[in-house]
Image 1 (tube, rainbow, N blue to C red):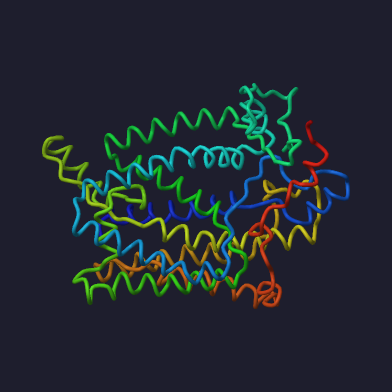
Image 2: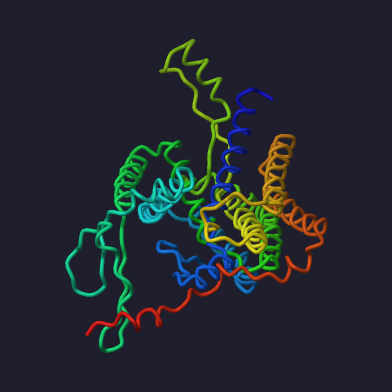
Length: 402
């Protein structure tokens, strides 16, 4: 195996693992034990800038492989019978819009993780407040805090939204990056966009329980096997591999596997005679799906630690607590992905990554619970972050405007 191929596999492994790690940290919410302490001390239970996520129940998990199959088959048929350039233009337009709206928030959150909420939070104290009522844009400063949700005298509820300066700066930066990508189709920019979208996916999709996580991983385990191997029986080729290779967009992470050979040729013969880059790839589904399960394990660790050591400082940005489930699932993900690459290299064929990732993550969580004698606790736990957000009615009633 060439050094370039080692580098490609290593880069994919490190990149995917880093995305799962950062996405899991970004998915955390302030634990219920801390919210109870806040209430006891007369403080608001809710974080000012906390975002609500999309909870996934077991009903959704059962249907996920069905909807995924429908989308995958539709894309396969579209690429086969319609003009490829037209399809890619529509899909890239969609991802460009989604990226412009979603990625700035991801970058803001990552900055808060890396720099700390207190350091970066001071940069967020200025921005623009948008109101759903007819009003002018107001400059936001520490002297004029963002208004609370306010009810109209007719009983209608209005909400205010603040867009911070870092979000606006990142929005402009992201729009520029996406515009350059659409013009150049540069693979590095595509990777940057794909990584941010993967982190956003892990942040936004919240499993309600480990049972739902096992159902999701099990269903997509079968989904991956069928569409990589079984689909060739009726389609004449692997539907999954066909869509992944035809889809020129930020839905996968790609790394050149002959980069050293290309550089050597350029050095010897010149830029004009350089060979084309050949890429190894990993789909975002193989990052996001196991990623939401790993994030669930981290949330369970947070719950256990916050109940043993309740504190007002134990917020969603507090990470100094024992993480046995997260460590086990993260290790399972790395080992599963490494096994995928090893089998793919030996058999010289694309592999369904979830064939290895789903069992690795599932057994990692189960074995950890068994070793800690917490099977019952793990199985009965319901993730509060997946539940509907609390009503603002009580708060709004004290802020009515006539």
